[in-house]
Image 1: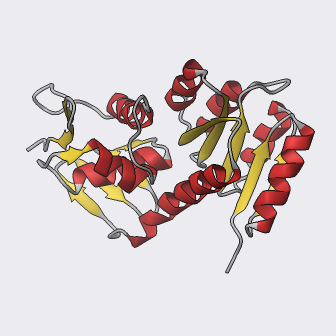
Image 2: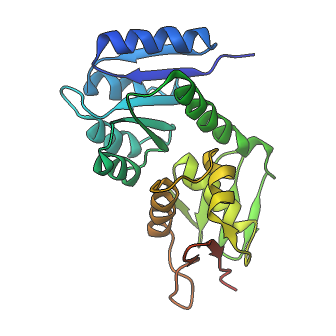
Amino acid sequence: MKKSKLLVIEDDIDLCQLLGTLLSLEGYDVCSAHDGRSGLAQALSGEHQLVLLDVMLPELNGFEVLQALRQQSNVPVLMLTAKGDEIDRVIGLEFGADDYLPKPFNDRELLARIKAILRRSQQCDKKPNLIILGDIELNPGRQEAKCQGKTIDLTGTEFLLLVELVTNTGELIKKDDLNQKVLGKHLQAFDRSLDMHISNLRKKLPLKKDGLARIKTIRGHGYIWLDDA
């Protein structure tokens, strides 16, 4: 079985080496970069299945790397943020990170997050080849989404959220169920990851014919996809 190739962009050399050793022992093929500029170049190579990206980096910080990366690539990104720094997490998710992990973190939590991200990035292969509903067309095999005939540029997490919503049109999907199905973890208090991903997805989707949003929020419960019939 081919190893998943991970890229660690972290300027702390000792931490980077420790992560490389840990991930290699878990069977991953690990590359590393110690500044934002070289890290971005490697991330854009298309050779990696996941990027672990620190926020505080020389030359280009993590947010700048993520912004530039998202202009050309949807490779999954796990942001490494300072403990308790909520604004870093929010900004990272707004810029297109798939998940975040505050430092310091334990090995088991890191490995669980990595496995969850890789697992959901591979889920598309198990979906039907083509999903069409109204003016929405989804191709899970290629991870392509179109609305009104125009391609929508989505991250892997946003795409899987859209698939789950569209394939359950008109039904309330509870937040915790959606969090587990797509993000691979139970919803925790004060965790805004799902809300931010849904918000980003809303911004990228055109309104329905009646001028209303396609995703309806049932406050405190979950979300409903509204067909544009």
